[in-house]
Image 1 (cartoon, rainbow, N blue to C red):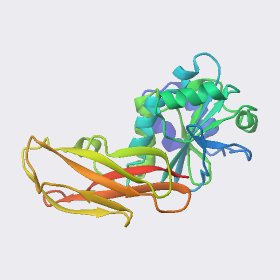
Image 2: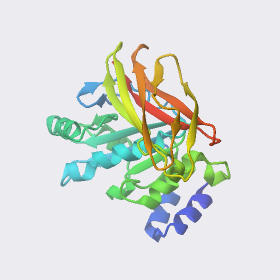
Image 3: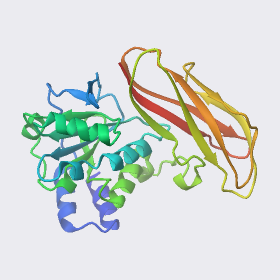
Image 4: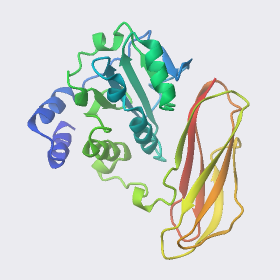
Length: 282
């Protein structure tokens, strides 16, 4: 595993320091200490961070401009892109080492960030994990056992983002990839809903753009469960045009993290377009 990662990182143009840090950290376990309080916005949530095939954990300390270090809007986009994978579960956690709770919660609200964070005022995480000092080395991709597969911040570095995507999708091991992002006809196919109340009905519009030279005929829409439904008023997505799909989700399950979707099938395409909603039910 280490040799494979070093070779891949070398191809991305990373320097020797990065390679040395990868060689040191790959295979080590990241400890998520007991006592950390998970929240989305300012709302506490029950979050089973370990219940996923892959996890991304990023640490932010309060040195300098916290808002600049957190990069919440950029992280929201990156997380959603990883969660679009149809075959693997990816959990995310941002740990902020700060005792300025109100300031952090305001930043989260102002940036409309809907993913889990920990405000670690007593530095439990940094005490349990003597991680590298540079911010670009304080983000880790973990396997199901919380062992480090790769490190580096995919928000700072598009090459690291590509590496994470390859490892999550399995392409590093010659496993077939899902559709290329360039082939997607919905450019915003994953929506984070944050925290919703049990019993709420959430409706989101997804726009599909047909940039190909051929019309596409709607074949079927298959939801992931009975709590998801879809509504359309069209049958053919003509070349060069767009159309909207209304996805409704009823939050009728127990308090938990949720990941729901609807697959949109076209007669002319072998793979569906997956439209995803994720968040927490309180």
